[in-house]
Image (cartoon, rainbow, N blue to C red; front, side, top):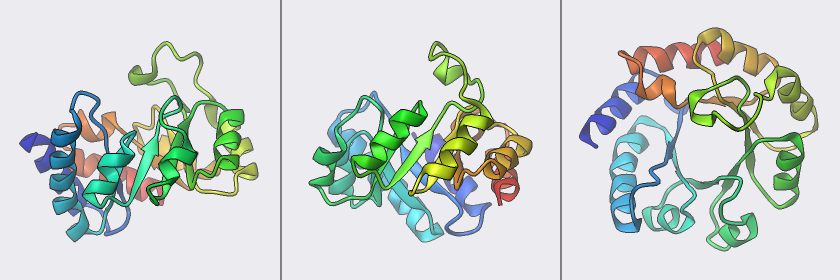
Length: 190
């Protein structure tokens, strides 16, 4: 994990403070190790102005003092996570799911995949920019586009379609120069 933390530090140092929100996501770690990892991420991110949210583990997010919890579509119910008093983000894979998450109390919704991506293979066709734009007009909370955003052109297109922000995974972890890659995406998403 030191390599991941080094990459994270390089990425956050390359972008303006507050331009990036980090989501801690590791489905292989039990609660204790995930808490320790989250605390290590917080130690890097907070001084550089980045929020840290924890994926699917509201208990770990609360124990670490994270900025929020991000719930997958089949994860913990929003009402249950709300008991811990944290802001709640949700991943959804359809317009209907996104609107239902808002009705249930989500503070932000991540919609995807917008473009094809290896991590979402087998989920059906990508939703595309038209679905993103249609949802952006109806959603009263911040909308984050995810899935296949691997170039500045796609980052810009997602923002122009109405996304308030973009989310990336592969671009941060597979690039030979993740700091430059993420800085370019942040600039393009403006």
